[in-house]
Image 1 (spheres, rainbow, N blue to C red):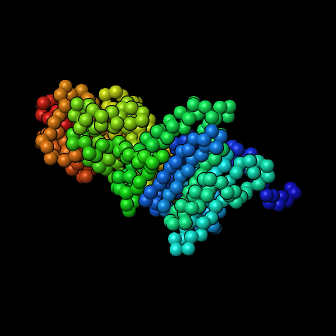
Image 2 (image 1 turned 30 degrees about the vertical axis):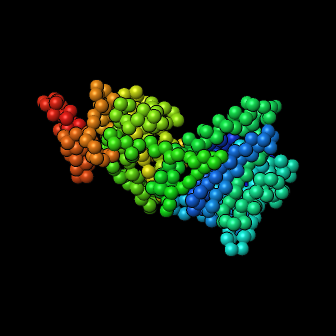
Image 3 (image 1 turned 180 degrees about the vertical axis):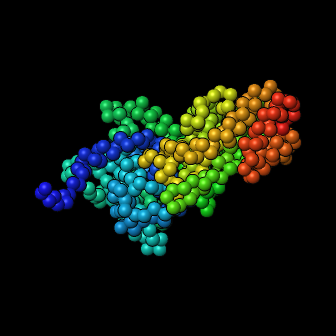
Length: 425
């Protein structure tokens, strides 16, 4: 057989960049991927500006993070960045900035400053028109323009990075980019993005993740955190947390599961808050798991095949938090909006989910909302006997006898149903 020497088969830049535009982003998820980079750069404030100006409409994301050197910026604009990702990094594939941006626009410009005392402002651009014309993997310098000039001026007094999307061919219609429909679409995208970012980054906004609370604004309006577990609701029912260990090669990662049953409508602090906590998909679609990778929500709602959506358990939600050590098991997609439930974790979650849904069903069917004395705490159950029942379950889980407790509870429901109901068993 003839010896075959290695042959360079570098893909066509023109064809591959065009294909990568359809990797699965929509406007909100693309914007969230840019915010990921700002969070990783230790930003405390991220300002998103969506400007409608017909064909010259643009989106700008500015942060006050650490910024980048010229070499770091050039690496950040490489498809499949070579930079190593540390544990806890929100990035993973080395594609986010590029694929997220170009999924919405034909030209992305990044302006950044890494030094505060002596600003060293650097600007580079990825331009699809240039790539299609040359068929080369090239970044180019950024031509002067209003957006670049404004970013440069702002960065003279702070470190940080500004990402600018222009030529928004996936956002605005080609035929009528000036009309009222185009303007209304831009405004609607801003509202949807605010809702989505408030959900995905709520732990950072609340200050429970990172070293300080994160402020995100869209066109000057602060993004409000949306926490699916409603920790401030006094009548929610928080079931015992559980920690599971998963093995990836020689490493072991921990997964934290926090199940809660939210109050029924009449037990919420207000009707407005009940409607807000329904979430973007409304109550039925928002029941189920909320997966967090390094405190950033990746997927919200649904039972990942463990059970079907059910009106009677719409108050049941569970946060599933994992670190980057177990990334391969959860198979997070490039757009960071979908995960797969690992088979071993699926087995571990069957009984806790069954218990969570049983409690949610009971709350839903209760004729009168359960009330608690003032000052009893946000996660406590609705009665002292139910408190005892929860303590029994927590102790049984800790000593590995939860299955035995379930058998006892089944017998108790047969012999003394009222006692079982009052204990929450």
